[in-house]
Amino acid sequence: MTTTHLTQVAKHWDIFCTVVDNYGDIGVTWRLAKQLAAEYHIAVNLWVDDLNSFSHILPSLNPVLQQQIFNGVNIFQWNNPLDIDYQAGEVIIEAFACELPKQVKYVIEQLHQQPQSLVPYWLNLEYLSAEDWVDGCHGLPSTQPSGVKKWFYFPGFNQKTGGLICEQNLFNEREQWQANPKNKMGLFNQLGLSGINIDDSVISVFSYETPALTALMAQWQTSPKPIHALIPKGRSLSSLASFFTCDVSDLMPGQQFIFGNLTLHILPMTDQTGFDRLLWSCDFNIVRGEDSFLRAQWAAKPFIWHIYPQEDDYHLVKLEAFMKIYCDNLAAEISTAWCEVNLAFNQGDQHAVVNYWSQLNSVILPLQQHAINWPNNALNDADLASRLVQFVKNS
Ligand SMILES: Cc1cn([C@H]2C[C@H](O)[C@@H](COP(=O)(O)OP(=O)(O)O[C@H]3O[C@@H](C)[C@H](O)[C@@H](O)[C@H]3O)O2)c(=O)[nH]c1=O
Image (cartoon, rainbow, N blue to C red; front, side, top):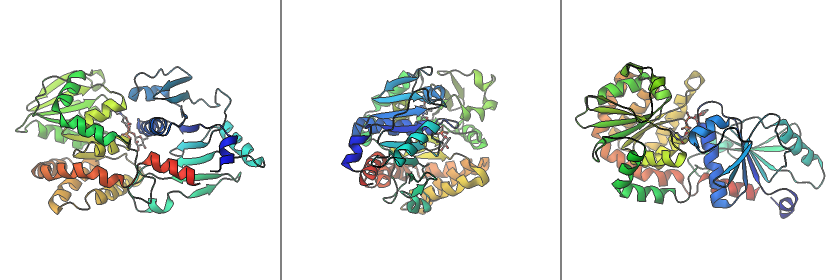
């Protein structure tokens, strides 16, 4: 990007996000927007088509406002057509191939046609995958019928990709948090969770529906050590209907249910900072999708990844690709137990998940050590936001 470019367009970046379902698309774009604003002092406009969903992970957001500012990010309700005149900035990020509004495309095309005028840098932020082909596709341009170039930005786990979202001070904050058990006990208290002793096993559960979860819960009841499963209202609980006498939709945060040595707590949803701290505070996390999957890795705790299901079981290919890199330097018995428990959970195989959970318990100490070592290996030389800023600068 040349100096002339900078003088001719507004300096802000726009990020457009449609909420397909769940919280992952908005979860990822919100993390990125916050980090660009906080660490790079970029004026970010985040356009979101469903503020109601967004408010689940940002409870102080007002879903009826057209515009509001949080964490230095300008959050806009994205209606089609846009409610306000669109002014292009330096960069436009369309998240996960969402279709940009017509007005935005029109402005880009107009700028492209004017001689001497500079066009915003247009990127499509893709989903995270550990598959090999990502290396070859990251950073490729696609020329649109208008002649404008759109660039593909692929997050990923090695230096040839766009990197992983991770705030600069995150690992320090997490280490400090985990160094003092009072932090986790204080958080549990703050979340309205009672009866958890400092040495009890605490497992957070944020998955999709799967019979594997039902089987694990049944197994945890017979654990020799007390286990607490912390579960927010939502899709995981739909798999656990048989555990309750009431409808799962009537469950309320703060309620707890005791089954043998397992206590099941209904968790309130919090903002992303609260969610991160929850993952840091548990002994084991069951996570899903894209963002909680990454945050479980940054928590430096063992986890199961319930990957977002795709057509023709393509998600299993993505799962295998990640398991391969995560287990690269692990001893065979740890790797087998961890991969098989993940596979069984994703395939809803009740027998296998229970069997491999037991095996996982017998290798939990080296697995914990691996979880501590992993974040720095995965991050490589730089996080996604810093690579993205560099990518734009070099273009
Ligand atoms: C439970 C909880 C979650 N969260 C946040 C963490 C994450 O940012 C977000 C959850 O996002 P994910 O973990 O990615 O899972 P998800 O299932 O909600 O999102 C999915 O959406 C699909 C449309 C995508 O294709 C998937 O790849 C995936 O991103 O919710 C909170 O902030 N507070 C909470 O209390």
